[in-house]
Image (tube, rainbow, N blue to C red):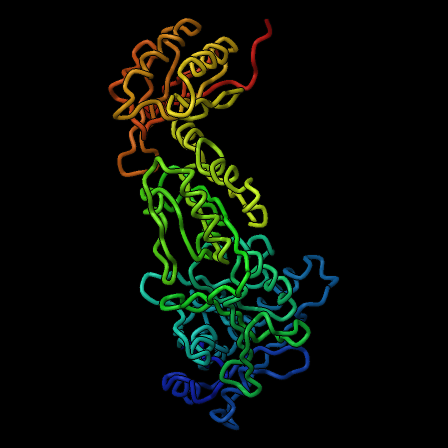
Length: 498
């Protein structure tokens, strides 16, 4: 009979945090295996030491390297693969001899642990049991004495070895987080926390539950003092109270685009700006797309008060508040960025920082759903005559149609504007063939999404409202019915010579 393999989680470091089952398995085992660096010391062995017997067979699995370089033909990964293959073969020999093998693992065996490399090589051949352990994540939160994640908050666990830009994006996009594997990665992790606007509330825990434990605000930690066994923690924001701005301090205004619909369309950068804001200002419909966060103030208003919203946001920032002005789509395309920058050009707001973060436009979203109708040159026009005369709109329609550009027509109609689509169709038919494809896209990404491809001559103004965008093809735009029966629209990048 073959022996049984155990992956034994020992918890974060304090031997008293080992589970009863872990102690039982160690007592029953014939062989105790543990990893160590070349210096021979093993943290896993030191945690379990009081439970080891003189007659235990100890298998020390010594890493051939940790962070140094190697002349192995397969590089670092090749050297480690060979090591894990050799180590698992040593354990397999014990198992074949009928011995029970317990592989010790700090924390939890299947959570960023070395045991999993043995498990993947042996579990399909031998009877195996994994004993879970308290992770360093849980231990760090417990030692900080603050909730880690509450309610509907999303916890993200990240290795500090990720590229800095990836770390920044993921930190910006989550509610709460733990970054592991610090040590040499600490300067990069600190920059990522700062770049994502999370540094102020980040906490640092070193050797949680072990001798030499240290806790601090991460911003105050000297990078030269950080060991591998440390974590960065962004704790729960529920019940968090934003600090009052210092007297005379000036905040900032960030104008963000939420894309055409819900959270799937937010960029990580936008998520970060929304999470870091003290105040959210915007049209109520767009504000409803943004998750509610504890401590934030939300200021919703009607869709037709752009100038008032912009002025209000700048006034908040002058009082030291961090303000996110929420816009649908991209804030610079028929949206709030212009209103904010216009108001910010006034002398009284000259010292207020203003940033604009891009979002997925309605035209891009509709085009992607339809195929690639914007694959060549195109023009974007608004059919709303609320801010410009219809004569200007008509002149631009004729010019763009005469240049054979694909057209993205925003704001085509509303409850109070019902005739513009019909008039635009008449103007376009002066330059375009009746069978020119038109993508009629409504509420892309939303619950009421509806997309149709019609001939220009058949475009019905009655099916168009303010949640609709029209993409009118050029003379080169094609509609193809594919094998699944779906129609796709695309415009070739190559234009024929005259």
